Length: 195
Image (cartoon, rainbow, N blue to C red; front, side, top):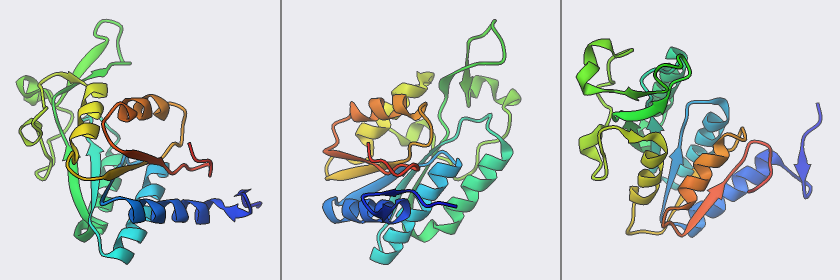
């Protein structure tokens, strides 16, 4: 199996270098974690550097209520594995999402308090809700939540978001995050190309 190389550096080494530079140039770092494979690799690589430097990293996981049980189990395992080195943000807020199941209701509200009796599953006890975020609004759009989270994670200090781009669909999320007032944004990507 051939190893991808850009500028005579392996993808893994290039990712580690970029993550190290992020730590060198920012006071605080955070990860947007989806629970997917690319996001998990990013989580592990960032935590490798965080542990080496004895730092805590903000980790944001947006729980959409109706996710695969294996994704939720994996996310819990990751949070548990790195519990001593993360500032966890497991977010369960009532937000509007696209509904691909029916044409009659094109959107549905995750974690709708008025429909608690039909939730797909219970909220994790450690999850943060609408009261934990000053910008939280019942029924806000998913994209709005991303925008406010990007702006609200830490306004006072120089910070950097570490995200993975495993698929083109992530581009919209990245554009929304770029609208925030952060100084920098690092995209460490699964295919080895910086964007």
